Amino acid sequence: MKKLLLFLVCGMLWVSSLKAQQTQYMVFEFVKVENDQLFDYIEFKDLMEKVYRQALNDKRIKGWDFWSLQSGGDHADFQYIMVTYYNDPVQMMNGLDEQSMIEYTKIAYPHLNSIQVGKLFQESLSMRDMPMRLYMKEISETNDSFQMKPGVLASFDLMKAREGNFEAYEEAETQTFKPIHQRFVDQGLMGHWSLLRTALPLGSEAKSTHLTMNVYKDYMQFFNAQSYEDMNQTEAQREAVNEGLNSRDQKWVYLATLENVVR
Image 1 (cartoon, rainbow, N blue to C red):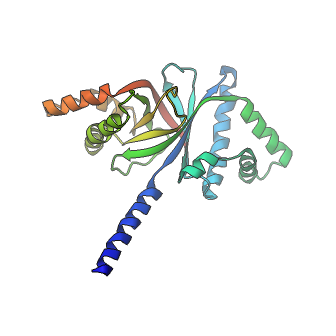
Image 2: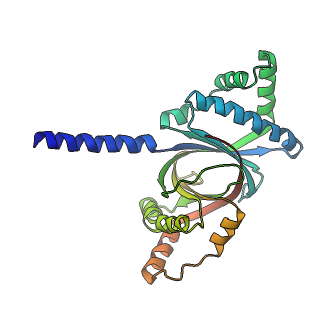
Image 3: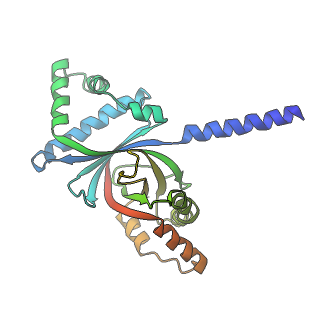
C-alpha cells in the first residue's frame, strides 16, 4: 500500500513538473520605426532572425517571431511586433543582454570584424523605438499541431479584466471561449488559440491584464472564421458568452502577418 501511495505521489509530481516545463513565457515588443527607415528595418529583421537563431542554439530562448502589423488600435503607429519565447520566467526576465546580442551577431556574421559588428548593432538600435513591452505567461491553449511559418495571420487581442472580475474573466476564457476556439480548430476555421496573462506591467494603471492570440493559416481561413455562425448554440451558451464578454474590456486588436520565425 505504501509503495502504491509513493508511486501515485511520484506520478503526480512528474505530471506537475512536465506541465511546468511546457508552460510558455513570452515577451511582446511593439516596435515603432520612422517611415524613412522602414526599408533599412526590413534588412534589420533578417539580421535579428540570424541572431535569435544563435540564441536558440545556445538554449537562451525557445523561439522568436517577427510580425508585421496590418491594423492596430490607439497605437496605430506600431508597425511590428517581436515575440520572444522562453522556457521559464527567470529566462524571460533576464532576456538577452546587449553583450550577448553582439556575440551572437559575431557568430551569425563571421566575415565582419568586432568594429563592424558593433556599428551594425548600434545602427539597428537607433532606427527603432519600443514604447511598449509586455511580459506574458501562457495559461491556456487549444489542442492542435499548428506550425508557425511565414505568411501565417494572427490577431493579438489585448484585454483588461474589469475590476473585481479577474478570476471570472479567466474562467470565461477557459470554460466558455476555449471550447468555441477548439471547435474552430477542429473544423479547420482556425489554426491555434492561446490565452496569456500579463506578468509585467502590473497594477491598476496597467493598460491590459491578458492577451489572446488567434492564429490562422491564411486570410481565407480568417475570413471564413469571421463569417461562421454557430446555429446550434444553446440559450445557456449564448448567456455564458455574453457574461464572458462583460467581464473584460477589449482594449485593442492587432492584426498581423508573420514574416520571420525561429524555432
